[in-house]
Amino acid sequence: MKKSIIKELANVELKNPILIEGFPGLGMVGRIATKYLAKQLKAQKLAILHSPHFPYHVLVNKKGGARLLRGEFYFWKNESGENDLIFLTGDSQAQTIEGQFEVANCILDFAEKKKVKTIITIGGYRNEVEGTPNVVAVSTSPILFERALKAKAVSSEAGTPIVGTAGLLLGLAKFRKIDALCLLGETRGYLPDPKTAKSVIEILQRILNVTVDLNGLDEEIERSKEIVGRMLDIEKRRVKYVQKMRRIEDERITYIS
Image (cartoon, rainbow, N blue to C red; front, side, top):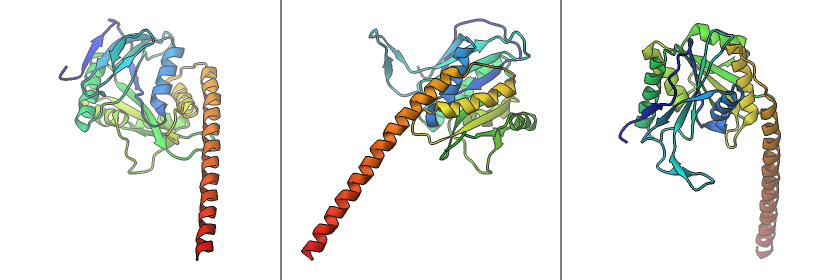
């Protein structure tokens, strides 16, 4: 395999489809949000993306089988709305600068083939969060940007870089005359963050006029709180131990002098 390829698994006609991308990144926000939406809407598999730019290992399943890392497209037909949806998520992002551009252009080729006119990318925005995470919106379309703000997203500070697939699709889509919106949820970033993913989905629901049950995410949020709580307890014990050892060392130095 010398370049990225997309293998279609279903031949379907989609109505004014919107592509929603969420690859792994800060806090796994994009992946969690995209996978959850696709699952709740019972989206069906559309295509698989393979690339030599993904990490060079395979994933092993419980039955002893193995497969390459990949991206997966799903589709959902919106019977009561104007836009069908295409979801894209995967195991990893491309690992090099050249690979990021090549994969992004491969995705955009597929989007054009499916007559996508709007792309929404999802990622994380590193920030310390105590309450409800904000969702930052950036767009190449003033109309799309206003829709995001009306859905209670907030505007980004000037000069904020958006790295990876979420940013490149946003920038490259303009050359294809495809409108693009990026939604970045505030997250500490060091652990999977279902709470921030929920904030992003709530914004998306308002933008797309689609509703899903979020109870499953609430359960994930509670589990996440338990993990964070245990990590904070470990950190507190570590800090106390370090402080104790410093006091002991200071006492030794005082005695010797």
